[in-house]
Image (cartoon, rainbow, N blue to C red):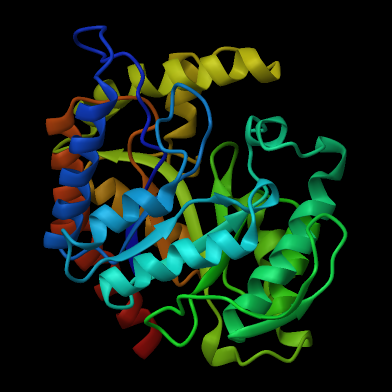
Length: 348
């Protein structure tokens, strides 16, 4: 199993000082996080795209290009690229540059986007939410497979036997489809034979088992090579040296962001009792000691049979030193134990 990190590069008030970091400082912290993730042997670092003040990265490819020249082995991905409101040609070109700079370590996780700010910003109609993604994913897949493309769609001008450059370092860029639990998105990813990244950010993880089963069944029925099957699970979480410290340090920033988003979407504010339930043995949060996080990753692997797990450490701004320690523990303690257990179960 591959293990790594996702981040939306949040910039919310520091839980200790109550102040916001400058965007410059938050970006410098991010690059240190990527470098450390690479040094401790994690497999993937993925950065999300947003167009709002509390998450500062609107162009993951630009930041990943900077990370490419500071790292040596770690794979560099978006999480997600909001493909519905972007131009697939430009997305492909941007990530081809990251791939060339990194020597073949770039990936794209393409999604429809949980936040909608990019749609009016770039002149897209939210009524076309599903159709935009379906059409643009089709074009992105074609661009990835062929140097010259002829294509016709509804939302974007047609392409008549045009070459798209540069080509990536890899023969093809790995393109994952990010899914939040919509059956149509699951089926779409499986029919294309694309890896699926399932985000579990609330509720009980076992309720997502039908989605992963649907993906596996559809993938097989579509005739895709089972050796190429990949399924990722992305979850919120945090690791500290002991369980209580992890719970206390993560709660404030996490509750701040989830309550803020809740006000926008009509959810109830986050409270400590709900938080503790979510980080219980069968809840969606992976917050605790290294052993607690190991146990939950392995439990989810039993549920889903996933080949990748990405931990979303900083939902709200945590002190930089705390994030760095969590990355260190994930890379040096959690990841080796998880990989050893998964390998042992496969060989058995």
